[in-house]
Image (cartoon, helix red, strand yellow):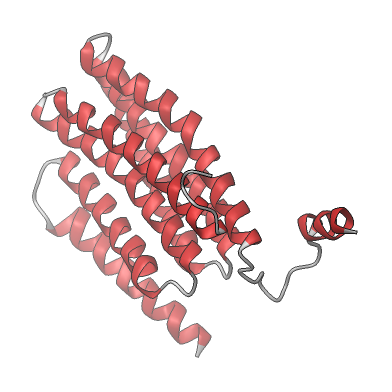
Length: 113
Length: 112
């Protein structure tokens, strides 16, 4: 009984984070801001859903597959986000107008001479 | 004009949440799956109207992660564990596709 309540709480929390992250993906003004909001919130959201499924199912094959999914999401999603943002900056997609500082561009100019 | 857009979006999301959680008679897991599908609608908006190619790549990457959670909930309802296999393979393919798209966007070839 208490296990079901905790598992459903984790699932509802994860789906709330999913929804908020996708709202950030729609509303924010820039590629980099959208990537930051979407990746953090959706990673935590789907990991929360999988952890809730693990708590509800216990130590059987379904629960262990959910744990493997959590590990896989935590390993791969930041790598993909970093690759996409680096490629976007190098291919010259402009930043938003409210940008104050761009350290990557300064380092690039310093390296080029 | 800006406040009008905010207000229309608030009415849209509020109508969806009201019809989902108070009108629709179904299992609680199906209501949660409906929320994930509604989020996928926003992601498809960003795929179609994205101003730059990087927006579309980000949206496709996020869509893969949303589908993993949806498959976990479907497997929880039907009490079958092979849905989670589909989710793991989808995550793997989404990761590889994101890296390949990023490499092409940067201007390099795949064998570089």
